Length: 337
Image (cartoon, rainbow, N blue to C red):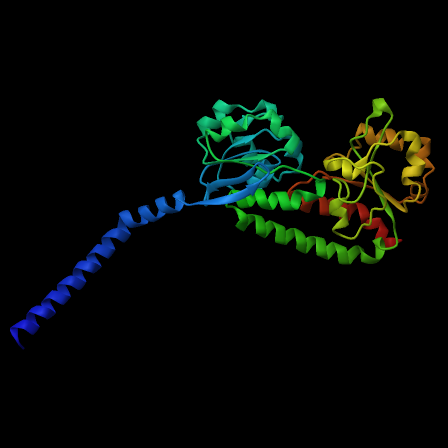
């Protein structure tokens, strides 16, 4: 073998060993860290209620408020602070409720009760505000933006919780768990829709919600797409009618007639559903309606076709699974008619 060829072979082997050594060193030390740092620094543009916002592509520390709170907990987002959300506690499972209770509270029940110092101390890299657009005025968004990118994704009509929850989970980079729960919900809803197809198909359904004002002598009539109706619709309930004077948000799918208008409002209903509390007790506003002589004379009431529904304010797929179970239990007598 020539000296030149021998030298070339030795040099090639040496170079290969050197490259292999460098590769091993990078993989074991700085290279992975560098990749992780690069991933953390990646951003994307997210369309929110407050515009197109540049946010981390993979958030590591998220603060959530309002309706985003139960969504983020259920989606297993990397939360470091949340607002209080007492109204949703009865609908949380044990694991989610434990998570909710241990997380630092950076705001109260109302948007105006935001503790900006607590938000800053949480050191978030993303803030998700889940309040209705009109309520954003109660929050100093500019001050929050000085802490971290802010995306506002608030409720509109009640039935839109599905799309809103998906967007909130997406912003936090937590769609994997969200998609799994959504899939479970849709499978359960489809199964119940088949179960009640024949039992529900002949009936026009009406709903009495829990936000009537007894002092004013009004009750809440909810239509398609409202809190008390939208999940029952997923299994085939057909809520008839529409609001007389449509307004923004929930006002487009519910109205507040006087108790004297009860026969006109629900007189055509073959079946009436009504909202009850998580423990099954009847709210004062609904009891007011049911104690009325006008209620007792409604055709659906006389026929014994009135059904309570629990968890009507579900705003996540996990919570809505409980609503489906409650509807199934409540509607069971229809299968025998």
